Image (cartoon, rainbow, N blue to C red; front, side):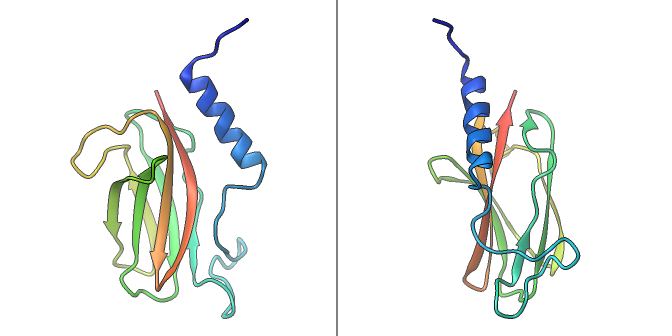
Length: 131
């Protein structure tokens, strides 16, 4: 019986979740207008690029918000423990995350979730960090 490494299993899990449509929680607009219509969500959270992310690298996350009532972006591990948080001061932009937690320590290999919250609405997506 062949054995597989931890990173192989994480990669397989990541692609399984993506292929089953679990990559977006919440609503978003189309590519031309990332903000949704008035009846839908007022926030847009782009895909992390690159994803998966290697140690020592950085990933960029685009966002757009209609209403800026104390918006913030958090990164959590698979145990839902917050590892990084940034308060946003503009309606749209891009956040760069380098894989470090709030204390400037390297986060471990695994699946992370990044969540944009504004005005009691949120959108969550996944990110894979590996060596």
